[in-house]
Length: 341
Image 1 (cartoon, rainbow, N blue to C red):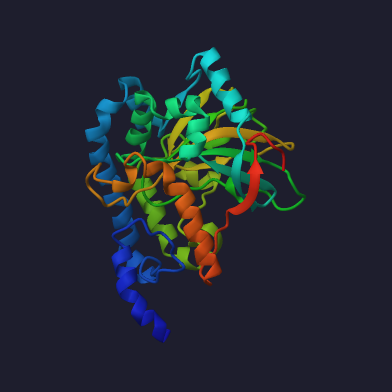
Image 2 (cartoon, rainbow, N blue to C red):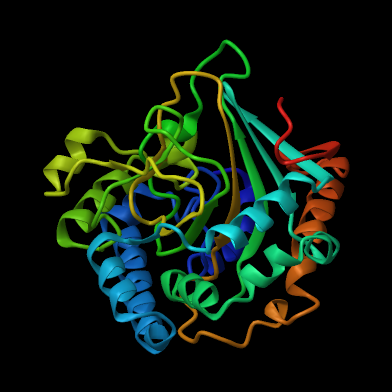
């Protein structure tokens, strides 16, 4: 044991009661001995039970149809979310928008994000109005199982920008060990061979088969390398079949489609046969899964919620300059969401 590790153990112990998921950096979360005794399995099971409890109290925010779809599949899919004229107005406002862009290059794919901060929302009132719709807000909160306000971006996916290994997000995986939400409101059509969102229906449930799989993975995760060691477990089609789950479903959908998914369920970015550009309004929310209540989140207050993303970017930039883990999202200056690489 490294002498410095002794000082880290109190922090590692406290982290067990949070959403911390990195098996390689936390020697308690990543301990094969503790996980053999059921530590990871216990965290997964408790987090799922608390999410179910919180969702019951948020049930009134969604329709019976949406609640039934989510319970069955782990996602809510809504085509033609907006009237055609309203959607074109929103898409045109995004097409004409320029702002500070951050990009991450993974494999052969660029992901570009632009924060929907107060300035962006003031310049795109149609987007602001969409995010304030009661049905939109209800779906985000119900699927995420929390009253916390999500983080909102305009996201652009640019595939095949260089000749190298594939985008690692094309491997089926779970984002983390507990229920969480990501949402995509597609502003461009998405063909089946152009990098669609892919999801395994029903894989959001902490079934006995899923808990057994999580238990087995947890005992080798710390030394597995890659994303699995960081707590985002990868899974094969054969393992999915062994759990009694159906094959992954690709969301080849037209623009003006909303998908809200629990990304504890297995999902991926589908294969793209050619260079493509996909533009969407993208939402993300991941709160401490062991908090039993839904509200009382000061950062969700109006005026603060919209400013979180620029603040997070600045903090991570500063951390990199101070010798800590830097910000993988590189500042690319002023761009449009529909710009090429």
